[in-house]
Image (tube, rainbow, N blue to C red; front, side, top):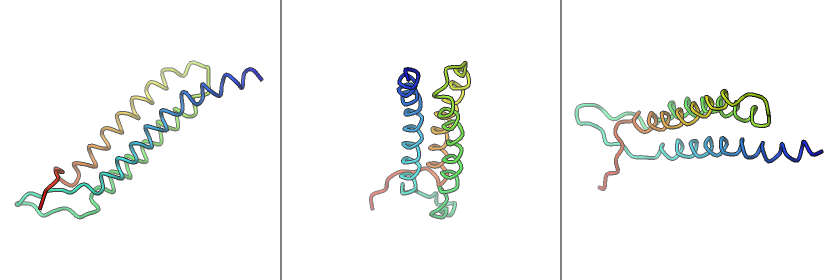
Length: 113
């Protein structure tokens, strides 16, 4: 009984930040779909759904390190190295994914018309 009481806060303390990073990144990937783009005069404008593929790719890839963090969060064994690599991958893919989504349709700036 005492074991279950101490493992539950550990599970929440270790798993909740990974889920929050995943959900916030998904929110930003979704919000980035509506950012307007400015097209160069020499090149045609990309289609409106050009940002969907990178968002789906990186959004799906973010599930892998999050799953590793969730599966190892309740364990007391020596998973600290695996957890550190999973955190680096999670944060790195979140940043690279957001950059890929924002720059896939060209440089994005707001234009007042």
